[in-house]
Image (cartoon, rainbow, N blue to C red; front, side, top):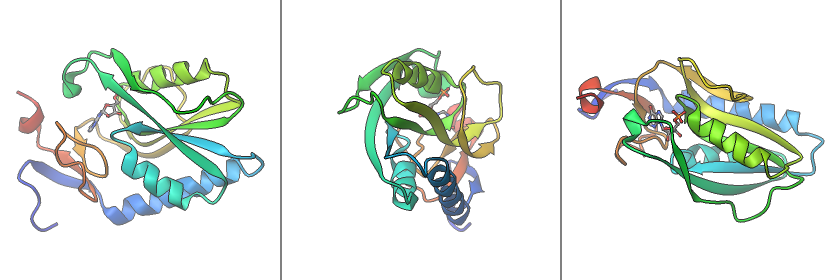
Length: 182
Ligand code: IMP
């Protein structure tokens, strides 16, 4: 790829590869929920907003979108696992078919927190969807839809950032280690 940003090591997934997989994920979801009245997709800000926009537009069944925002205590590349809710849903999800839409599962702490929090609100069903999952041991949280398994490196683009930078690249790229490791 020409003109790769100097902080980037390499491109892991191209725009075309991502778009194709988002399309097949939407097809899987549409087929699994063919009999549901509607589905509520809950996008986790900020990282999942681009994925959610594309997934939602590819999804052929009735659905609504809502958002939550979380914050990890400490630096994001070295998070200690504590999660804090900073923006909640607009509407109750009791009796709804809910899918949590995340950008990436790293340790699984965030997804576990979301899963447990939303489960307590008594949805009709609750599933999880993440576009990327890092290749490492995960906490005990079910991942129902996974776009891609990727190596345990810091990635940016397609909604994912490093210190709010490089979020809007159309592809997914690996950050150079010297950028995020002292
Ligand atoms: P976890 O709680 O360790 O699974 O981390 C999940 C959250 O950390 C994601 O929702 C992202 O916001 C962020 N994150 C983890 N790994 C990366 C990465 O490689 N690039 C960008 N953000 C990441």
